[in-house]
Amino acid sequence: MKNKLYRFLIFGLIFMGLSCDKNFDEINTNNVDPTSESVDPIFLLNNAIINTSFSNAQLIYDLGVVQQIISPNSGVLTGANYNQDNRDVTDDHWVKYYENVIKNTGDILGQLQAEDAPDRPNLLQMTRLVQALTFMILTDEYGDIPYSEAGKGVSDQIVLPAYDSQEAIYADLINEVKEATAGLSASAPSENGEVLYSGDIAKWKKFGNSLLLRLGMHISEVNPTLAEQTVSDAFEAGLMESNEDNYVIRHDNNFTNNAGSLLNSTEANNFYMVSTFVDFLSSTNDPRLQSLALRFVGATSGPEQTVEAGVKDAEEQVGMPMGYDNGTIGGVASDLGLASFYDFTQVDRFLVAKQTAPMYIITYSQTQLLLAEAATRGWIGGDAETFYNEGVRAHMQLMASYDESVAIMEEEIDTYLTENPFDTANALEQIGNQYWISCFLNGPEAFANFRRTGFPDLDSNPYPAQDISTEFINRLTYPNSEVATNNENLGAAVSRMGADNLDTNVWWDQ
Image (tube, rainbow, N blue to C red):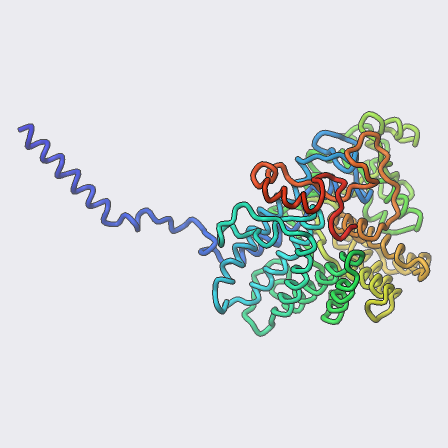
């Protein structure tokens, strides 16, 4: 009886095993989990585009170096306010861009370039341009970076990419942007689902050429021959023609502006506009000061920074000076007749830096000002003054995009340009100063142009305890994660470029 029972159990187990094995592959295949092959790559491109919006390293480092926004506080906010190395922040651009942009663009390129004749050529070229923009920002911030092997974790299983020299990166980026822009075609299948220009090929081409212009101008001091040729090629090919062509990330409640999120949450009371910037705008009666600034007059604490206490009148704005910390800034405020450091001017975080505020990456204004510089250098035809005036006007007109209440009227713009006319004898400095203003809240480009041109002519941060021996921070330091996991490749970059600190110059800033 016991043997019959055993034989019955064994037979049952064998039957169950055969039954389970019959559809094993089908049952154990996940048909709903997305992969780079199953997801329409336009969604990967959109994720990449949205994530070209700047990380908060721009608030703590980039905008502090160029003396537009700083915090007097230390800890997690330590950065350009003290000229100190804070690797919990210097990695913000790196992590955001490599994980959310380069990974996605790399996956798209790996998929499309694997095809002999990709059936979506415009998607391929758009992806190349977004990737090129991101690599430009990364190499400008850090110097030598993973480039030729980056973003190939899926396609080539490269998890520890080598670092390329910035000189080699720039040479390749110029070619990439030229090829990708030329490869865009209105007769090819449209990509209306992308979030930047809704598939408008003409706008994509103008963006590509404007990116090429920026690449050329960035190397003006280290390779003027290549710079002039690149700028001339971009100019002849056709650039942004109005604010309608801007490369802008339009945030919403789902995809918020990083700066706006920080300035309206945990750090709402901790960032202030620098006196250097406020005083410059005030000295020229610049109407942008009233659009950008907000001061909570009489505030002695964060909770007292209420909308009702906010004042936007230009004559009431008081910028925070550089060189002080939480323990010393109170005395400075008192000497200035302020209630506390909470009484200094902030960027208007309810309008200009709200969580849903747009973030401008490359603009018509910046493009026109770069053309003014190029014309002044004799690299292109056209009138430098015309380019200059149009660049200033375009940025002032852009204020309306933040909120109609901070829009600048055309009569105000005309008055400003009349009172502050283009000065041919001082053209490069005047253009550089206006580019500084046009790049407000675009920290990476403001930081890059300041290093390249030396304008505006800023006094160095006098804070007593610093991690730099130079007058200004020259680059951001590499992430600790790279030190820990990719140290061999990072070490090769450091031996080629210079020490991994805030002092070392990037290639084009020699």
